[in-house]
Length: 249
Ligand SMILES: O=C(CO)COP(=O)(O)O
Image (cartoon, rainbow, N blue to C red; front, side, top):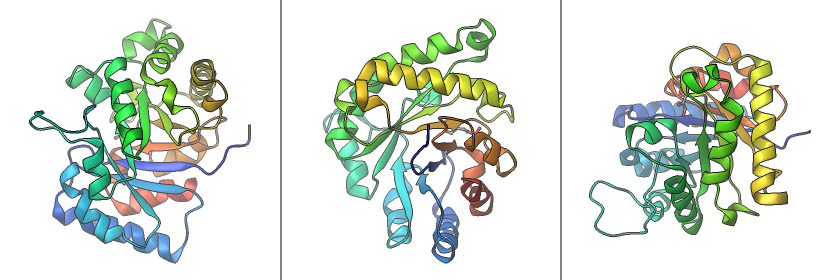
């Protein structure tokens, strides 16, 4: 199927201080001199969003959060709401990353509730799914991601702008990636699960691939059927590396 414009998003995770704004500025500058053929976003720690919004103003780079609370406000010490991300200048938010599912016990139901909150705040959610190594070795990858899609995507997503990111847990930060055939197989299954869940509303949202994407493997991964972009961790921290991936898209 012919895909629409791809989305390449950088997830800085818990990396980056004020000094890193220079990387955002370099990215903006490079994409001003030579436009990207894809959408480009950076998802820094929440503390940097507002400053980064100022740095990126007037350019082509979009901004996202890495998580939000399911409630709009209240007594939730340490949390950030979707509306706060919008207020700070974000238009996207990553939800259900495996590091939050594993480290913070987030369930599919939590991710669905956060997605509702993101939509209510006008954010475009990037909903992450993916199997562990044990699940892949047990031949359960397709079953796991299909189940995660059914549980993590609220029906209200239909007709809204959103993305899904397939990130095999064992490929994150390890330098390992699935074969292109494995990526194609899972992305096809994810698409089928999205359509089963949302009907026509599940047919067009991009399915990003994430997990050890680098300038050297980006072109072949991004050429796989149903790969609608990339969610990039480590290689998004340096503008030069991230640009290598953007150019491949
Ligand atoms: O978790 C990821 C992006 O959300 C992927 O991280 P790496 O690109 O560092 O493997």
